[in-house]
Length: 305
Length: 262
Image (cartoon, rainbow over all chains, first blue to last red; front, side, top):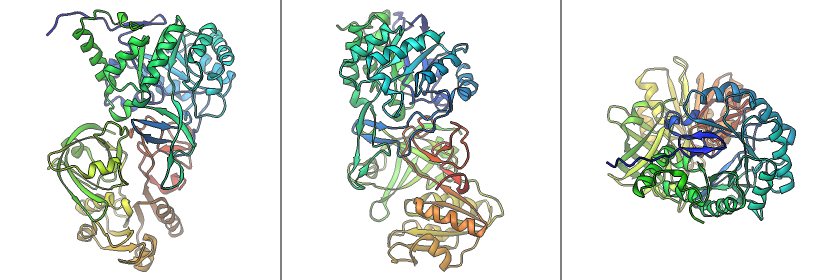
């Protein structure tokens, strides 16, 4: 086969990643449940399920519903709290040669900061601050739909964080570029987007909502073009790196996101229908680079303007 | 719990009355690992259907490398409707075996109860109990109507009593009505079926001082315990999230009826 040498490694906020592929928070737990199917060492990073300063019970069931080429979820950020996370989940992940991005959630500025402080002296590589979950009533998206609040929470988190901070943005806004600029102005090291789009499904046979929460976050291949558009817009608006996500289900989708301006890509809902999709995309990116004789993946980032 | 992704080949498929299908698959890796009461995630081939369909194992044969899935088609344009059109030689992707399955208490007289589409997983359990001579057993099957799918096979394994919602066969009413009408006795109940049935069985077991194990159903996404979609409320803190939410796919689907809120 070809002797053409390629580099898939990227630098993300000063953290070297062997490749740009990670997983979208909430779709992969902390990797444990997937670890007998996927070699976690192959991934550039594992992004964990959101963790708060204390356990959250989440929403009533049903929490998920399928839609055409997509799905809705309203899990409500059920999580074991930071103590169990550090003892069990982080300890588990540190056995692997992959970077760890911890998704942080909270109901208030204090709760976000609390988690960030607890993680400050741990062996975590990056923190992703979830200001965009549509399924919790307080916190979450409240910070993600107002640029002033987004900037304020970014600043608050930055003063305590010892790791680079990624602000995770909601697509449920009029101007996502403005949100990204606000986070950048607040000192964010990176942004990730998109979180899910708020949606609804009605069960016509039972004449009720498909989800107990009535609304849920829509994800899956159906949202991919929206995500590509938003990553592109944000890439034009800010100078900090981007993790692009939203409906990535193939190598082609991942490359598209990188060309739009993402330095890294997250695979989310696709893990549910193809548990080993992340490995396939890592390999697929290499094949793509060889096919088009692209020596360095960094030459693809934001290459389409 | 060991699990594997496997491309299964359809050996045969037949209808068992309206909307119930009996699918036999070649899937040697999963068949080798399977336990009664476990399930597989079945992935639709249609790309617009993203989520795997969790279907219980009605049977498996490690020697033959086969699995048997008996399932209900839930409506038009559904994943299960797609599965119902599979023919010998077709392939379908599976992940499994998933979940914990039933653990039988040896020597304790068992009552196996299946209701509706909860009937199929009880067949493999009944066969295992008989083959391994684990305990005495009586089988109680609750059907909607005269479509008593799999009943003849249950009758070959052990004494079987029946109820039907419309009274077409057996005792008119629920599985509990059949238990009472036939004076079925035992030490432990193993059950799969609709929640009201499971709730009634839990109450019955409580009143009689019996243990009761129930197989639960909930909307799932990943099927392996990562996404936390399919939780059921538990009476005590769960081991995963330190709240009171057990994961049906990974901590269950079989639970002691007293450890969950039915």
